[in-house]
Image 1: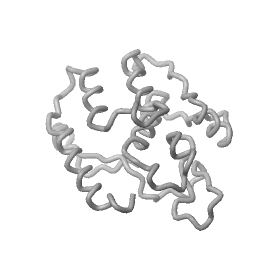
Image 2: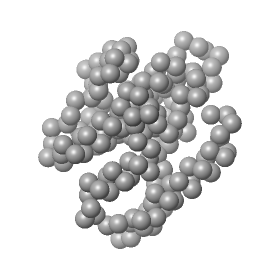
Image 3: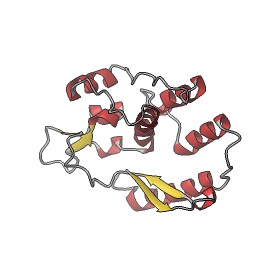
Image 4: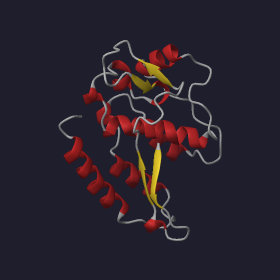
Length: 174
């Protein structure tokens, strides 16, 4: 989910969005049930989930910023693929097996997907969590890739503050 907290048509410094999952769409067919009916986390989006989520969907410790970065990589792939459904020709079980075996979505065939951008997307979808960037690092990588864009110097700092607030609120339960 992408939540838009504030939007301004001409001033990007006044735009604030947050990527999140508040379980609002858990009834969707893109979610797969786990075998543990008594779990509070018994559905998850298989096609955009990180390997650690696929391995242990009921382990709340698996749901981290780095698993969100993996999902962000899938979201970037979806954007460059003009909204294509990830792994469209595969069953959930096949997606699960492929991702756990280190396979990733194929590079979209479009002019916007440069070698540099694809490298960033692959970093987001790295198999090991420690090989993925944080969201602040991801912002820096993308900013270097598009140096002529309208600068947003406070965005990374603002995200760090929001992330700290989330950690304070949810730190002990996640």
